[in-house]
Length: 550
Image 1 (spheres, rainbow, N blue to C red):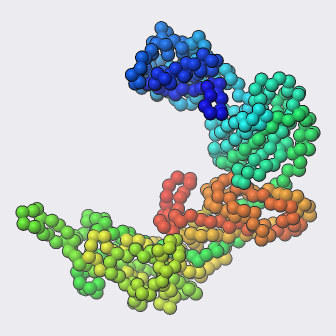
Image 2: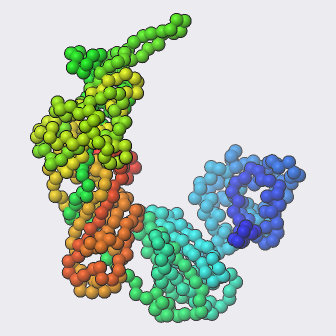
Image 3: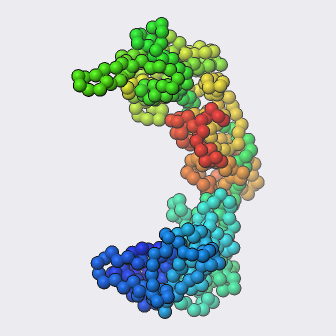
C-alpha cells in the first residue's frame, strides 16, 4: 500500500461494522500484493455503498469458517475471552482476524496483537529491557535508505534506563552487518541542535544506552555509514557534557520579584431599601461570594426572606421581581500587623456593576480616584490607599446601587504591595516582608498564597577547580514531584534559558562555572490560578483546593 511517499507492509484494522466496496477492493489488492493485514474484533458486515457487496469474500480472506461474518462485537461472544482464549483465524494469504467482544480487556487485546505482529514482522528498532512497557512510547521513521529517526517518550514519573537496539533489517534487506556502521545522534527537541552519541555494535546489533527522567523525551537519528568500530564510534561522539546536579530539597533563599497580592472575594452583605445607613437591613449575610446580586440572593433563599415585588399586566400571570432600587454594602476586614510602605487597591473595570463607591476606613473612593494599571489584565484599575490604612483592623466596603439583577460586586478586588500575607481563620492578615529559606518546590509559597508572578530561589554551591573547563548539563535531584511551573536558571548571573515543563534540564557553555562558589538562581513563574480563583491544584489528590487550606 502506498500513500504519497510512505510505504507500508502491514495494516491493522480496528473493529468495523461497514466498509465501502472500493475501500475493500484496495485492501484486498494490498493482501494479494503480499501485505499483512490484522483485523481486530469485528469484520464489516453492512453494505452502505450500494455497490455489489460480497461479505463472504471478506470472511474467506481472513479464514472465517465458510466465510460467514456476523455482528458479535457489541452483543458479545460466548465463552471466556481472556488472553489465553483468544485465537487468530488466518486466510490463504497474510490476512488475520481476532474475533473478540467489545468487553475484552484492552491490555489483553493489545498484547495479543503485539505478539503476532512481532512474530510476522519483527521490529528492527527496540527498547530493552522495557520493550512493551505501557509507560514508554517508541516511534521509528525512515527518512532515507540510510537514515532513520527514533522518538522515545517516557509517559510516567519513574526514571527509565533503557537501551535502544537496531538491527540490519532497519535498512531493508541489506546483508552483512560487518559492511557498515551506525552513527547515533541526539536531536534537541527544544532547538533542533544535534549532539553525537556514543553507541556500539554488540553481537551484530547496534545499541545506544538512553536515560529518561520523569516525562522525558528524546529524538535519536540513526545513520548508516561506512563501518566504524566501537572505539571510532566513541571518538565521533566526543566528550559528553559534565553533569551538574543541584539539590532542590535544600535551603534556598526565596523572594518575589513582583509585589505581593491578596484576593478579596468573600464579603459581608447588607442590603437596604434606602441609603446604606438605613436602620433595618432587608438582607444581612456573611461569607457571600462575589457574583451578580440575583445569584447571591439565590444562595440565600433557604436562610432568609428576600425583598420582592409582585406585579402583573392585565390578563397575564403575576410576576415576581426584586424590589429595586436597593442599596447594597459589601464589607470585609483586613488585619495589618503594620502598615506597608505602599498598598494599592486593584480591580477589573467591570468588577462592580451599578453606581458605586468604596470606603477604606470611612475614606471614600469613587471611579475618579482610580487609574489604569496592569495586574492580570489591561482592563484593571487601581488606587493607592496607603494613607487610609492603619495598624490593626481595616474596614473595606463597596457600596452599590442595585437596580438590576446583574448589579452588585461581581468580581474580586485585590490589595497589592510589599507585604507578607496569611490568614486568621477566614480573615486576611498582612505583615512586613519576611526573608525565608525554602526548598525549590511548587507553590503556593509561604506568605504569598495568591501570588502570580516570578519567585526567585537562590543558593550558592561549591565546585572543584576543573568545573568550568567543559560544557555542562544542569538538573536537580529531589525536586518536588508537584513542581510543574515555568523555570529559568541563571548561573553566576548568566541565563541558561527557560524550561516550561518536565524534564527540567539546562545546558551551559564552558566558562560559566568557576572554581569555588557559584551562584545558582531559579526564577519560577507561577500560574494565575491563585490570583483569579483563590485556589491551587493539588497533584496528589488531583483536585483544586482553596489557598486558605494550606
